[in-house]
Length: 247
Figure (tube, one colour):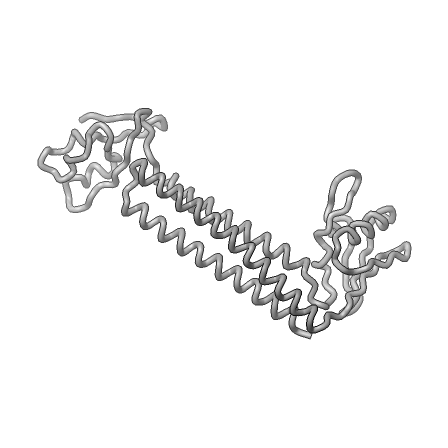
């Protein structure tokens, strides 16, 4: 029984080994092969899984197809993480350490989040306190907050930095809610980009020999994944908008 060995050491059975009266014979025996596990079913009721071998005897592995979905999900997850990070920077009119925890300041030459060099707490509903672990970091932190353009003026008393959160007017709340929605739309762009890239890879795989049925199934899985992440984006923005508009 003729075999071809791939570069990964896997053996595949050429179609030329199948009976000539089988419905698979129209395929080119020099290009289409069966994985050994599928060969046993080749003459039975179940159709075998078909792989295409190129001139270098490289087989298309099912795990490589699954990897396309994994990469797409990682990219979509990254878009959602970025959205959550950006929404933390949008003021709600309430004191929250999240507002400044990721503001970067130079710490011995390295840009470092404030949360890693100071204790951040809330004194009341309108006041954030920043207590650096090293007093010489007061000025860099103060400067970093100014440069972050948060619309809040830090007050440095030589011991701690106080941030007083001004109340938002109704108009300002609507502006912040609009900004949150825009962040959501930007995140959806990232999700769609990940979807498109995955779809393109699946189409290339089909052209390279992947079964069209498997390709269609994977495209459906990508579409379901896209829908799930778009819903997560919408839910995240909805929660932020509610927080912004609540006085």
